[in-house]
Length: 149
Image 1 (cartoon, rainbow, N blue to C red):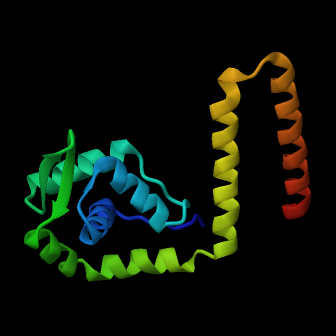
Image 2: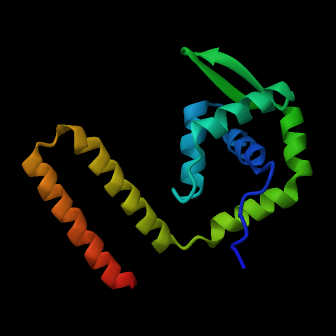
């Protein structure tokens, strides 16, 4: 038996509206806010967020304006009504978020920071430093495998 998907069709709209309920934001801020909402366990791609924002605008659930060279979106009364009608989905998504243990979130964030650091520094490494970095990562992986294995 496979694991059930935690996100269902249409959930992206609900999550984006829920974030915009807090304050108006541009697309990148929406991505960042959703990632923080789920403790880094789920971080939506721009390919998910921007089309969703466009759909919400096309359906007159959000309004947008140009501010500082960026398109800023804000939920409007129709968007709030839509969100109110979807309260079961909102509860399900919030319950998912609340079930994530803090310790596991900390592990995920630490892993993400490690990968980000390795990838950001990669272009600047000479062969010697690349070999040393690989050694550090391999040692960390071995210790982690021992811990979780």
